[in-house]
Length: 394
Image 1 (cartoon, rainbow, N blue to C red):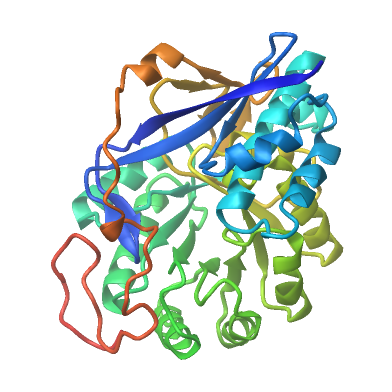
Image 2 (cartoon, rainbow, N blue to C red):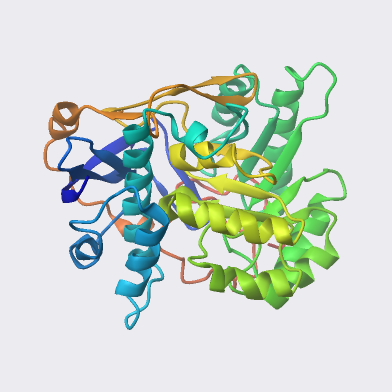
């Protein structure tokens, strides 16, 4: 079997409401979802989700190769970018191709990827993550009620701009989950998306912990700030979770050496091989690993085969337009199916029917860090809404 070519397509995730974090929101709730289809001479096509802007430079590293040599091809793609470096968008391109390679390998074996990787239990524990920073209280409650009806009892709320607002919203989500928990105390996490300095993080979380029990605080300071993450971890009761924006084991090493992370995260857009390697390194440090992503199919399969998986992020309850996934949400978990590969099917006609998608206005989306991030002296309204509580210390 040989790799013969690729096709790039873009669909959308239609949330039906604003979604975002402390850095910005997609006001219309429509988020572009690029993906790549990797073709072979035996008619098996692999699907890799995620942005891949530099695929023209990376694809020659695997063209004509046997796609079943996934680990070797992953390292070949890394070597292909030796001089320019493989972080950021380059790493995302490698991740999309890597996921497509795993999809082909599992399809060629006639097995779902979780079986091929040696997984035993098809149930992958999940937590609810609504990308909810712009939602008013009533809509926030309705959103997490929908998750709770699927059995989820742990939730991650976006925040970091106003401590009083965060306390109110976390308490609201806790109470919604408690309605369904049958006496089990719900789990709560707060995601600041790198919005704070070290001292801001300690003040903000310390204030919340006067009345709330947080399981973890996610990305309290910049992703590479090992000393800062460690300082935050020492100063709060909650665990520190980070890693979704780190690209390569070399970026994890300083954090692990500094004892700066309690829950090691990886993003689905960086690929299956990256997750497996990060999980192994985390396990060597007795740390749990937790995948991040809107449609984390590849990492869900891989999570069944590592000993230190903790819980996986569940964002939208529906897949992107034109895609179907072979898993269900039951009793608070992803339940993986038996379809060969990643279990993703693509309706290319439905995707192409979307037509030419207008470019997203990146100025107000989560992908652009605000100018005042880390330098705020006062509380701020969530992106897209007026400040609902009195202005006070951030």
